[in-house]
Image 1 (cartoon, rainbow, N blue to C red):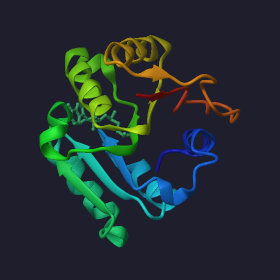
Image 2: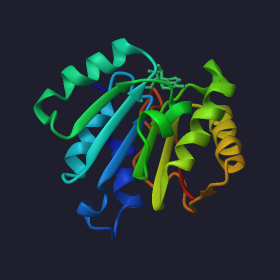
Image 3: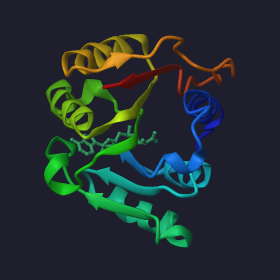
Amino acid sequence: MADLDRFLDAVRYLTVGRPREAIEKVLIAGCGFCDECGALAEMFPSAVVTAIDILESNTRRTVAMTAEISDRVTAIQGNLAWLRKIAPGPYDLIVVRHPNLDEGTKNWRDSLKACIHELSAEGLMIISIYSLMEATTANQLVKAAGASLRVGSPYTSKPVALQGNDRYILAYGS
Ligand SMILES: C[S@@+](CC[C@H](N)C(=O)[O-])C[C@H]1O[C@@H](n2cnc3c(N)ncnc32)[C@H](O)[C@@H]1O
């Protein structure tokens, strides 16, 4: 299980002042090994969490890892670019943790745009990234899709771990 400390601290900071129950619908975009699904379901106990990944092996793993809270977590194998069709919003919180943009910028341009379109009016999209170059690309793609960066990035004073998970954390509203 990855160290989620810095990431979760930023999520807490960004949602401070909002009752936990106000976050009703959460999307984990590109859930991969689903480390963040359980932690976010725990942080927002009223939320219904949808985890999407293009690889079926990853969504199968998410189903297995979240079996105890299966009434609140749904894992869907699909392309985020088709989010409106496969799991429409509006979402109160969308999390894109370590998307690996360099594996396909066009793929993520379409996917991030689709995510922004499914964000609620008060919603928050949090992207967490390993490298500065990737963070710069993510910022350009999301801004081009019409969202605005919240001031104060990286929204946490927790130090970056040696291997650098969650080094650049960016949060957007619509
Ligand atoms: C590096 S992993 C990150 C996984 C997890 N969020 C984490 O922090 O450990 C990025 C994930 O995004 C998924 N992905 C890439 N493009 C996608 C798309 N268009 N739709 C859905 N998932 C996608 C990949 O299959 C991969 O599992």
